[in-house]
Every structure is written in structure tokens, then in C-alpha cells.
Length: 179
Ligand SMILES: NC(=O)c1ccc[n+]([C@@H]2O[C@H](COP(=O)([O-])OP(=O)(O)OC[C@H]3O[C@@H](n4cnc5c(N)ncnc54)[C@H](OP(=O)(O)O)[C@@H]3O)[C@@H](O)[C@H]2O)c1
Image (tube, rainbow, N blue to C red; front, side):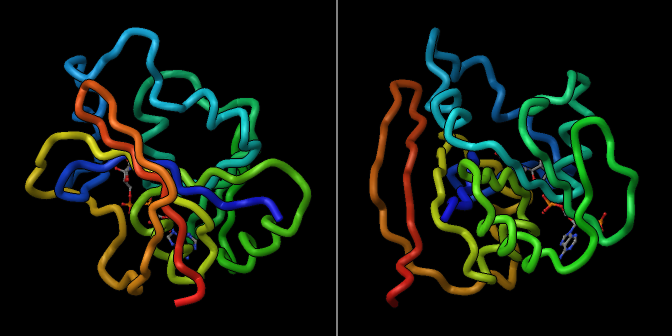
């Protein structure tokens, strides 16, 4: 079965965005390492589908660039109907059932982009198979957390770690389903 992988970056204190949704701290030039994309392009080769919450989608649109995943099948989750665009389709009902079904279909792995609400919904439904989490060495103090209050307790197994010379630490994690 294809895997649902949450590939995401968080601050040291576990936030994925500022309270107002901005992710400028992720793109700080201080972190640039020439020729290094922290596994992003290799990861992109392994997926053909992305999942985003509506808030994350709006942040992506607000970045003012062309849609970044035009060659993928992209689903945006919202409680209200929206017309599909050239690049995205909206999922408005039975979100977890939809993802369960998607995982049964043939294809490459599925990237759970985020954000917090969608991460929590799919974690609590036991649908996340793997997390690739890059810790950025910054404390934000407040913001939108990786998982929202109400996330269920989940023990994780760390299957791989990678340190980068800019201080990024990347963890590959899998839920301990047997616990
Ligand atoms: N650091 C990173 O790598 C990273 C990665 C991804 C995202 N982010 C950040 O995360 C932030 C957004 O996180 P968030 O938690 O506020 O929002 P989110 O999870 O991106 O989106 C929340 C929205 O998803 C829809 N939704 C939630 N549950 C649903 C369900 N059961 N069925 C259908 N639709 C559902 C609702 O849309 P409607 O309101 O339309 O109903 C809800 O308002 C953004 O600032 C983004 O930049 C950061």
C-alpha cells in the first residue's frame, strides 16, 4: 500500500508557522547551504499526490509564485465546497475515509503537507505512516503547532536522523503501531 508521509519543518519549540500563518523564518538565508535541499528533490520523486488543509493552501497561494506542485495530484481539505482549479481538487466530506481510500489506490506515496489541523486529523485516524521532520534551530515562542491540541498520544520510532551543518536536524519517524 502507498504510504502517507508527513514531510514538514518545525521550530525547536514545535511550531510550523507563526500565529498569523507566516513561514518566513523557514526561508531565512542564514540556513542556505549551496547545493543542499535537505532531501526535498529525492522525496518529491517518491510521491505523486499531496494533501493540504485549506489554510495551508491559502498560504501557498499567498507566496506569490506559480503553484509549486503542478505535476502532482493535489487535494485541499475544506468544510465548504470550492470549484477545482487547474492544479487542485477540494475534499469537503469524509476526509479520513477519502484518505483511507486514496491509500488503497495504486500510485506513489502521498505527501501530507500539513498544516496542524490536517496533521492532527490524520494522526488521530492512524493514517500517517511516516514523518520526516526537520527541526530548524530557532525558537518562535508562539505559533501554529505541528499537531493541534486534541492530538492523540502516539509513540514514535526514530528510524533515521540526519544533521546538517546549518543546524537543521532531520528525523525519520514511524508510529509504533504495536503499542
Ligand atoms: N512548516 C511547514 O513545513 C509547514 C507545512 C505545512 C503548513 N504549514 C503552515 O501551517 C499553517 C496552517 O495550519 P492550520 O492548522 O492553521 O490549518 P490547515 O490544517 O492547513 O487547514 C485547516 C483547514 O482545513 C480544513 N479542514 C480541517 N479539518 C477538515 C476536515 N475534517 N474536513 C474537511 N476540511 C477540513 C478547514 O478548512 P475550511 O476552513 O475551508 O473549512 C480548516 O480551516 C499555515 O500557516 C502553513 O504555512 C507549515
